[in-house]
Image (cartoon, rainbow, N blue to C red; front, side, top):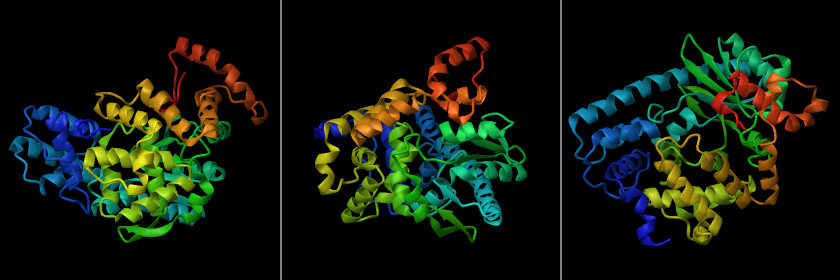
Length: 402
């Protein structure tokens, strides 16, 4: 990659360049050279749309206090208002996290919180900066039924999939899905309980992650069980790669966690990610952080970052970052995950194809005993056609779809 093309993404649009600069300066250990200086922004409404599109109002608000940027007062006020709403929402989610940690402890259910406030605290030194829409946590698959009961007792109701969550539905979710969505209508807090971290079971295996989890950090003086920071790094890389890095906030979080580390520590994090099957995802993250935030890639990784599959994923991720509505694009949902699986190896490709053979909605609509689960790939097209005729797809955009 030439020097000109390497910096094209951040220099093509002054509004995007300013966004990068402000996000970079929000990092807890920000370096002055983390992003290229922005040019003159002409369309400030487009800049605000970028802030909303990438969900970085908190980072931009913090960055504006650290960068001498000529930003109109009305734009600063708009950013401050967004950041204020974000801070209030984050406080509600932190309060929910604390309540849930205590409830899970009392019930004897092992839970691990990830992303969210714990990452925000480490990356930006504050729980009020990082934007999120829900509280993510992981439980063991065997604890899913007990988890649903506990959450119901705490006032949470199923949103995706819809209630009621019968034993048959819980079995289907455990077999064919990795997460659900539950909402507390009284407090306005949304949860995403996970029982796996990826549909591809060869990525981020649960055993090592659960073994390394501990109550290393606290929120509001309460110890919260989270992933080991090394494991969280691997997860964030995989989450970004499989999501196409279509939101800048994910890459900004990763950059903020890496920017204060010496080169040998960044290289060590990559080696650890490799042990969890996340090596290709980590290489992609390093390459994107170099292009967008000028974060140096460890010398030992310079050649792997430039490998052909990495270059292809890199170009696609940059395109997804710039798409106005990339969340449901074919290249993000299908092509990039397959490229990532190919970079991981043939067994990962087989696993990726395997996860597309079953739509979890089929198992929810037509519950079968476990011994007949092999029929779902055969039923996928007729059941999809039946839902199409009835206008029914309750899992909505959370499912893979046909």
